[in-house]
Image (cartoon, one colour):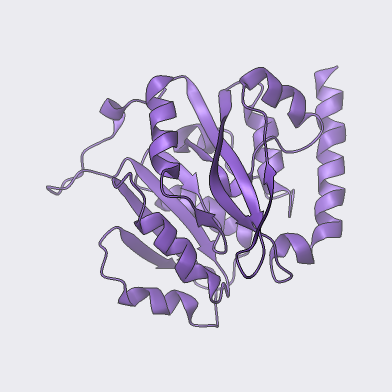
Length: 246
C-alpha cells in the first residue's frame, strides 16, 4: 500500500523523491536526450530521473552530464549487462517507493507522472498503473493508439492473451516488484510480460485510459531486432498462464 505519507525522509534536508524514473540506455543515440527532456519537463516535479548506462559506446549518456538538473542521476554498469539485469539493478538503486519505467527512445507527455501519482493517491491498494500510448516513428510522426484495458478484472483476462501494459508507460511499487523477485531472467525479450503474470492475480492493477506516452517504433530497438525470440517467450508464458488459471 502506498501513500504520500509513506515516502521516507533522507538524512539530508531534501526529501527522498516520490518517484524514480528508470531509463536503461545502451547506445540510445539521438533519442535519449528527447526522452530525458520529456521527463525533466513533467508537471509533477518530485522525482529522480535515473539513467543507467549499460555499456554504451556512442557517447549519448555522457552528453547528458551537461544538463544542469539535480534530479538527473546517471549510473554506469561495469560492462554491458543486458536489459533484464539493468532493470533489476535499477530496482536496487531506486530511492523512491514508486518507480516509473521509461525507454530511452520514447517520450512521456507532460502530465504522465502527475496523473499516475494521483491514481496511486486515490487508490492506495494499487500496485501497477500503466497508461495508453501512441506509436511514433523515427521522425516522431504519430500513428495508432495502444488502448490497454483499464480495470483490474479486464487486465487479468487480457494477461492470458498478451501483456496488459505498455511497459515503458508503467509506474509501480518497487517493494511489490522486488517481493516477487524483480524482472525474471528466464524470459528474455518478454521479461515485462513475465513480471505482470506474477503480479496481476494477487495485486490490484490499472491502466489510465489516457494518452500519456509516445511509444517509438524503429529498426534499431531491441523489440524489433529480437521479435522472433520475443514471440516465442510470449507464447511460452501464455501457455503457462492458461495452465495456471485452470
